[in-house]
Length: 307
Image (cartoon, rainbow, N blue to C red; front, top):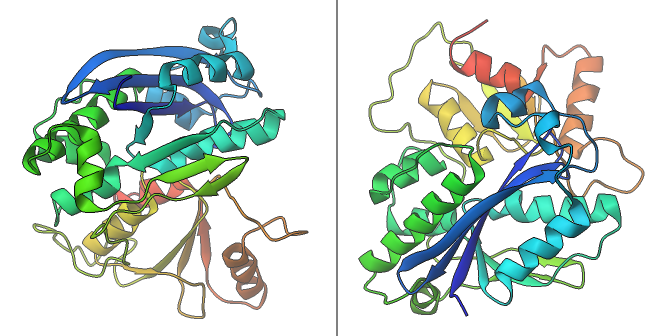
């Protein structure tokens, strides 16, 4: 039985319940012994332009692909009872949870851990913990970002590099050595994985080499994030704001200038269509506050200095 299986999903649109591809890398000891990927027919054949621009997968490519129940069966056969790794488990495990919920398929049982959290412990102080930056820090080749197999292989390489640095003989030994708690999917219940020292505090200090431009759209402005993003994790987006002279905030208040609205929400209050942050933002706008709502594409455009 392999020690771990790394997975990476690509999605057709902004919803996590829209998988169109999954890649995997099987790890035994300190080696990848098998890898691959296959296309998935998403429950809703709606492909967003932003997503297609990331991974290049089109509706025509997925027309005859496996539907979710069969794709999940195939993935479960590869994983078996192995530990599941992903570079950002809230997204990849979220894809499984979201698609199962949307299709009425029973959620599989599995234990999982996040290589991004692991990287925070092993390589502290990186300006970004997106997969390309972590792979570079670990000396791992990332052949083609947002190609599912390539990303799974790179995340697996990160886990193996971390194991070697920690003096472990296998990826599984890392988690015994550092005292981590695996996340769990069981009976539809979800619990996050935790790793000591993997801090998720709000970034306040600019990354090394960051230079402020007083004319940047976010300079000296307060930004709040709500909902999940496709292109980066929330922490990395917050750090990017700090690196251009802005301030990342946790709550929407009278000082907020922008609210960045991601495309995916989990755990909405019963009877509510929006997150609490979004509802507060709409309330403040209605009262006359100069508060701008941005989707992910608009945020990225402004982050790069666009108008």
